[in-house]
Length: 256
Image 1 (cartoon, rainbow, N blue to C red):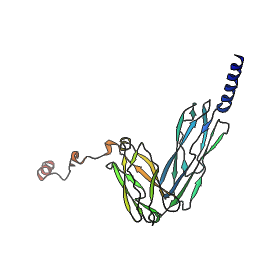
Image 2 (spheres, rainbow, N blue to C red):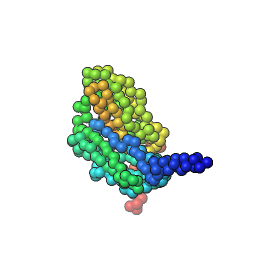
Image 3 (cartoon, rainbow, N blue to C red):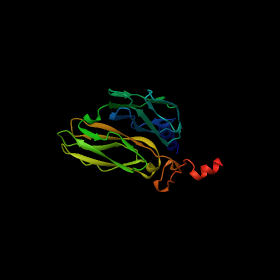
Image 4 (tube, rainbow, N blue to C red):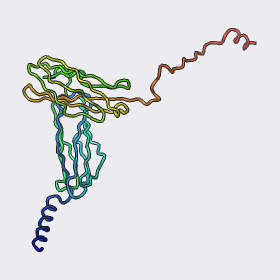
C-alpha cells in the first residue's frame, strides 16, 4: 500500500510538471503567400491552442507593420480550447519580396509567441512563372454564384497544383488536374450558402510544383452583397411621371 501511494505521488508530480500552468501552442506559425497582386488584400489564418492546465490570457497582438492587421476575437482560452487568428495583409504598392513578423503576448511561460508571413507583391501578373493565373483576382457581385479562373502552364514541365489555403466557409474550389507543358485548365470557384449572403474579402492560395522548387500564388477574392432594398427589380419599376407645361385649356382657365 505504501509503495502504491508513493508511485501515485511520483506519477502525479511528473504529469503536473509537464502540463502545469497556461501553455499556448501554434502548430503553423508561418505562412507563405507567394506571388500576390499589388494593391490587393490577402488573408491567412493561424490556429491557437490552449495546451496547458490553466487558461491562456492573450494580452496583446502586434501586427508588425501598418500593412497588416490581426483582429483577435477571443482573448481567453480555457484548457483544451482553440481559436482562429486571421491575418489581413494589404499588398499596397510593394515591389520587393517581403517577410513580416507579427507576434502576440500571453500569460504563458514564454510570454511572446512569434508569427511570420512572406509575400512577393507583383505588378505584372501576366509574367508569372511557371503558371499564369487569369484573372489574378476575383470580384464576385450579387448576380454571380461562381467564377472560373484559368491556369496556363508556360513551362516545359508537368505542373501539379495543390490547394494550400481557402476560406471553406465562403468558397469551394473545383478539382485541379496536373497541367502538361503548355496546357490550360479552368478551375471553378463557387460560393457556399454562407458566401452567397455575405460580403467578404478573402483569398485562395495555390502551390505549383514540378518545375525546380514549388511556387505559390495567392488570388484575392472580393464578394459584395448589396442590401435587398437597394437592388432594383426591373419587372417592378414604375414608369416615372413626367410633369410638363399645362395643357392650353388649363392655361386659359388659369388666366381667366
